[in-house]
Amino acid sequence: MLGGSKGRSVAMGSRRKDLVTGLAVEGAGAEVLVFEDTFEELDMDIWEHDITMSGGGNWEFQYYTNNRTNSFVEEGVLYLQPTLTAETLGEENVLGEKPFRYDMWGMWPSDACTSNAFYGCERMSDAGAQLVINPIQSARLRTTGTFTFQYGRLEVEAKLPRGDWLWPAIWLLPEKNAYGQWPASGEIDLMESRGNKPGYSKGGFDSFGSCMHWGPYFALDKFEMTCQSYTLPKGTRTFNDDFHVFGLAWDENGLFTYLDTEDQKILEVKFDKPFFKRGAFVDLPGTHNPWEGRSNAAPFDQPFYLILNVAVGGLSNFFADGEHGKPWTNTGTGAPYLFAKAKEEWYPTWAGRDSALQVKSVRVWQKPGQGTAKILGQKLGAGAATASADAGEGDDAVVAPTYRHSSGGAAGSGSTGGWIFGSLLFLVLASAGVAYGVYLRMGGFPGIGNRVGGGGAAYTSVTGPAPYQAASSSVLATTSTQQRR
Image (tube, rainbow, N blue to C red; front, top):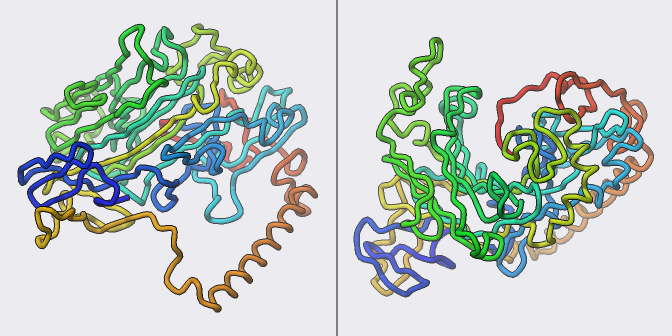
């Protein structure tokens, strides 16, 4: 994962050896590989799953879960594969032919719901009220708390999905909201695309965009000033046909995104003025400058983490109303219900594995003294760690601390005591699983209603335009400024 074991390049003192071309590049400022995943497996130590129905703050139609149907590795490729929720819960439950409640609170820490914003941990369906459970299952992986970096070069080799209303993204959010809630602390969208066919007005799977989100608060997001899209030449192969490198080069002086090589820039933003001045926020009385006293790079001067996901639809203007047979509107009611009922129109455009975001590799390089990086709680220091002074010219020095995949168990795991303990733990967990299964089938414990299914606790209707309904009045007042996918 980290270092030179599988990398494109590794540190060699003042040299960088490219393991693809075999060439060595001279110079004390040469980049050092600080993070790499070539997906020999889905590394749960690095990639955490979001588990929520919140819809990314845009009332999107997917929910994110952790299973090997929606996120898996096959032959060195990570797949984020959207599927129909009906295949898991049954169409009658998704559509609410009888009132049905579904929650994602989880039983163990490893399957706990990660966000209750927008009723993300518990919802209900009711066909009479045009309320549905999120009709699509998908996956969102992130390196929150496992890998972050400030400045450097990121490259993600990926193939984009095709299928109407798919919304794949490769993006970054700040490790800490040092300047306040979104978008005051920034967001970097390396790649966002649409699965609609080429010719779609906002761009299909032959197009993608790069954006930066920033502003003192939610209503003052000035992303349109730092957003750029790219469409492949007409008649050429699409982003669904081939893998491409989506790159980001970022330092204290500015950033740019690129396609395949650094000379094919997509978005370029120089940090030549404060973002408060760039957005003309000085002309808005009562608006405080959250970046006051900081460099021109703020809020993009902090460590960020990586996110990979496939969203579907939603009520933002990412998909324009009245085009391409869109079966819902961004301002109307019952959008997820209308989307689900129109399945025969859009689902035939989905193409199995070709409707997945496919990722071959994720790599990050830094120059010595450039920014910071942290993996699994271990800081690499100011800029990429230097190579061992004892490494000879012919040696591959490894960036420390080194992180590698391992299929072996921990030391001592083969002892008799460990085997007995593991067996007892398995029996306890298995018994708990059986008991929990009975609990689900019997409709829950007395007095608390069903965990999954109809009946149980009373439901409180949602006021306002919310297209989903919460199953508990305790979350009805939830509001959020979380923004994305």
